[in-house]
Image 1 (spheres, rainbow, N blue to C red):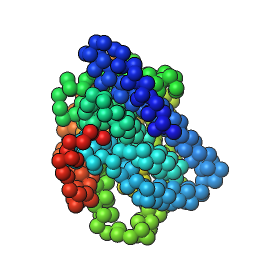
Image 2: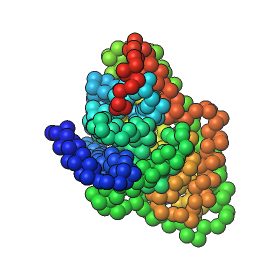
Image 3: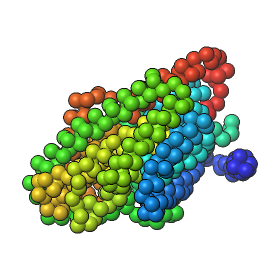
Length: 466
């Protein structure tokens, strides 16, 4: 059905563009249209995915209110089913999706382009959505933002594949990077964050080569998301007025702690993945590991706090927008254990939102120790969010701009940038590579091994980019 629509669109588009006499205008329009289409579809997909993901979290809370003991049933079931869906139908739909997009950008060349189908495809989109929803219903501490980026990359690749032969050549690498930026912008409603993410995390070439497409795609995806979901901030407007420079010290302290702990969390998750690849060779061994991991998370949630489940947005909303800004000592630690167990389960799910909530809980906990006022506490919480996300991504500017746009607190740009830079520096103590970068190289190596027997001939090199 969708392919028939695009065939009809291509025929009509050819007739329209054939009537345009100005060749420069025609070429510019032809170059821009695929980005516009991909951006619109990304905005639609991001909103519907967000709605389904929100429904999954609400369903989890409904089940737990009905019977809190049910967590010991739904957690193992959710972990196992989520893992099985990925393993059975789309192995590279696992985890966040950002490392897969980074790997796709690196492999978007004539020699490796055939490998993109493993990382970005319609099957990835379907399994990514279903697996992540199942995992979050089972209490997995995962988010939807990373998966949205892989979904957007898949959409842009699909649009690129459908271009007819007479269409001007468009770089698949630029389309994937633009799709990723549009996906992040639509997921968080943060257009500048999407642009900075593409430049800081994905782009290995000068921005001039695709800046127009990038800016346009982010705008269209963001406007589409706002058209469907309404104009909103991901978090809201926390009160931060009246702060003084004395908050400088708490911001730096929390940033350093979050940077060290989040980078250590990345190392732990990578080690768990390596241990699994070496030791867990059969499905039964994987299932035992998943059940054991799920029961650990279920036990921590049941006996301590159910706040450690899910994306953690509830924690961010509570500590930023209510008078209850205190946090128990175990919540920040368990907000690290939850993502570690969920992210390494093999199911689909991102770590953006869990990282932000972990940083928020650390910020709230240390603010109480330092006896800060409510407005100062909000600043330290936001700084903790930036710092913890930076320790995972090693992208301080992206992290700072994301939190800035989520809360519309432009007056805090200095403190947020300071937190990001401090975290970025101390995170090098544990590892020089980010979690995403390490996983990217792992996926590239896996695909090289998987496809090493394939022979590339001249016809492969000269064929139209997918």
